[in-house]
Length: 351
Ligand code: HEC
Ligand code: HEC
Ligand code: HEC
Ligand code: HEC
Ligand code: HEC
Image (cartoon, protein in one colour):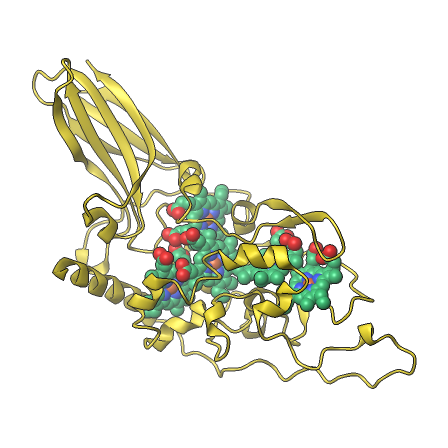
C-alpha cells in the first residue's frame, strides 16, 4: 500500500511538472450565441438558426448516434471520468488539469494553441464540441464540403482544412511532444491516418464512409502489436531481443512517463527443467523515466531499434522464451501477478 501511494505521488509530481510551465488559462465560456435571423414569411422552420450554441455531446447524438457511441467509449469520452486521471488530479482540485481533460472548443481558443478549461458539462471530457464547434459557436468543422440545408436544426458543417491534419491534435498532444516526433519521423502521415481509420456509417442521410472516433492508443493491445516488432537471436553467449518501432509515427511508449515496454525471459534446460522464470532482461525496459530518476530515455523513435539481452549461463542448453509486455504504469509491473499483457513473444533454442 505504501509503495502504491509513493508511486501515485511520484506520478502526480511528474504530471504536475509537465504542466507547470504552461501558460495561464484564458477566460471561461462559450461565445455568445449567434443572433437568430429575422423570421422569413413562408420559410421552413428547418432553415432557422439555433438560438443557442451546442453545449453537450448528447445533442450531437440525436443525429450522429454511431459516432457518439464510438466517442463515448474512447479515452476522449472518458478524459474526465478516467479513474487514473481523477486520482492523479485529486478529483480535478488541481485545476490546471482541467484544461485538456475538459476543454473549451479548440477552434475558439486557437488550433495549435494552449487549450482552456470549460466550466460546464465537464464529465463529457474531450467532447464533440471541443474538436468540432467553430468560433461562431454553431457551425461544425468538417473535412469536406457538405450541404445540410433542409435538415431540421442541423449542424452546419464548414470545410476546415485543419480537421484532416496533425495540427488539430497539437494543442493537447504536443505537451507530450507527439506532434513534433511525428514531424521528425519523416513519415507521410497525419495523426488521423492511424488513429481515425475509415469506417462505414449509417449517417443521418444514409450510408457513407466516415472515420472512427474510438481513437485507439495505449489501451489497445492491437495498436501495440502494430507499433513494435520483436526479433530474438543468440549471439556471443547472449540472447538478444531487438524491439523496433515499425508502426507508430511517434516514440513508443509516448512521453507519458508512466508507460513502459519490458522484456522478460523464461528458460528451460534440455530436460525441460525451468532455469529462470519471468526474469527481466538487461536493458530491457523502454520508457521515459520520471524527472527525478535521472535515467536517460529509452523510448524507441519511429524506425529505431533497441535491444535487451540475457547472458546465457555457463553450459546452458535448452529453450528460451522472450516476452515483450506493455504496462500503462509502474503499479501494473509491481502487482502480483503483473497486470501486463504480452505484445509479442518468441522462442529460441540454445545452442
Ligand atoms: C438535427 C440533426 C443533427 C444534429 C443535432 C447534428 N448534426 Fe451533424 N450533420 C447532420 C446532417 C444531416 C449532416 C450531413 C449528412 C451526413 O452526415 O450524412 C451532418 C454533418 C455533420 C458533419 C460533416 C459530415 C461529413 O461527412 O463530413 C460533421 C462533422 C457533423 N455533422 C458534426 C456534428 C456535431 C459535432 C454535432 C453536435 C455539436 C452535430 N453534428 C449535430 C445532422 C445533425
Ligand atoms: C482538446 C484536447 C485534445 C485534442 C484536440 C485531442 N486530444 Fe487526444 N487526448 C486528449 C486527452 C486529455 C487524452 C487522455 C484521456 C485519458 O486517458 O483520460 C487523449 C487521449 C488520446 C489517445 C489515447 C487513447 C488511449 O487509449 O490511450 C489518442 C490515440 C488520441 N488522444 C489521439 C488524438 C488525435 C489523433 C487527435 C487529433 C485528431 C487528438 N487526440 C486530439 C486530449 C485531446
Ligand atoms: C496540455 C494538455 C494536458 C494537460 C494540461 C493535462 N493533460 Fe493529462 N493527458 C493529456 C493527453 C494528450 C493525454 C494522452 C496521453 C499521451 O499523450 O500520451 C493525457 C493523459 C493523461 C493520463 C493517462 C490516462 C490513462 O488512462 O492512462 C493521466 C493519468 C493524466 N493525463 C493526468 C493528468 C493530470 C493529473 C493533469 C494535471 C496535473 C493533466 N493530466 C493535465 C493532456 C493533458
Ligand atoms: C503510423 C501510425 C501512427 C501515427 C501517424 C500516429 N500514431 Fe499515435 N500511436 C500509434 C500506435 C501504433 C500506438 C500504440 C503504441 C503506444 O501506445 O505507445 C499509438 C499510441 C498513441 C497514443 C497513446 C499513448 C499513451 O501513452 O497513452 C497517443 C496519445 C497517440 N498515439 C497520439 C498520436 C498523435 C497526437 C499523433 C499525431 C501527431 C499520432 N499519434 C500519430 C500509431 C500512430
Ligand atoms: C479529438 C477530436 C474529435 C472529437 C472529440 C470528435 N471528433 Fe468528429 N471528427 C474529428 C476529425 C479530425 C474528423 C475528420 C476525420 C477525417 O476526415 O480524417 C471528424 C469527423 C467527424 C464526422 C464526419 C465523418 C464521420 O466519421 O462520420 C462526424 C459526423 C463527426 N466527426 C462527429 C462527431 C461527434 C458527433 C462527436 C462527439 C460524439 C465527435 N465527432 C467527436 C475529430 C473529433
